[in-house]
Image 1: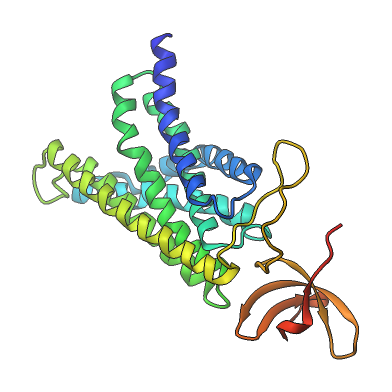
Image 2 (image 1 turned 30 degrees about the horizontal axis):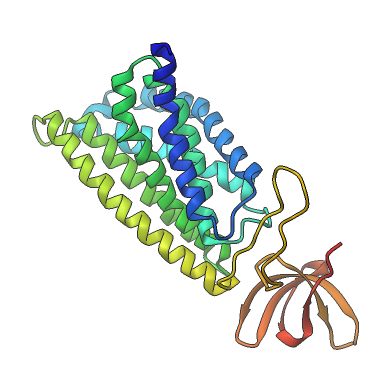
Length: 307
């Protein structure tokens, strides 16, 4: 095996392993593999506009990017640009997809977009340098996944919120920018943060603590996301059709879930097709044809027949 092959494997391997980890966290109600793959590819594609925007911002800001230990370079040029583009991949491609119906889905998809971005970035930075590839495997790659994954918790909350979705998304983006920007600022200023001469060892130590703290925060976010999803959808698993051909896996139970097609027995005695959006107490909140939204007693909502 050539050195270039080893370097490429080191550049790509950590991102693929982390992607698999996030998919395992979502294993109870997994997402379509094609959607996850497409978000990863969109993350890869977002590298090009990121480079162009960052070059443009650097040119406009000029020497200002170097002030304060390159504060603007870290938070505005790099973090804001990259986190905004990764978030855009999820919002534009997935926001209206019916299978995006859980808080955990937000975490998985934003992490997938970030890892796609990180894969190409890592190949560009470390495709021919084993040392840089190994260093980034334990630093920059987890940083991308954790910063965007934390955003995904807020994106998932936004997707299921009855109101205030925009606020949830903004908070999530700001969290990612703060984490990503602080990480970059520590490295760019070598731990000095614009207050004095830094040492690269201090920067690495600060970022190690940051990554550990973010990993704990990610664990709490995943745990809370799964508990919210169980409360909304029920604690059952939702198997997917076999992605590799063959008949769909038999469902564990015909239990309600967000986005489920249903029939509503209306007061005129007729049944109308609808989509189940949420439930509370003795009622389901349903979207009917023509843009109508109604709270309907549970006993008048039944699963639509499968064809």
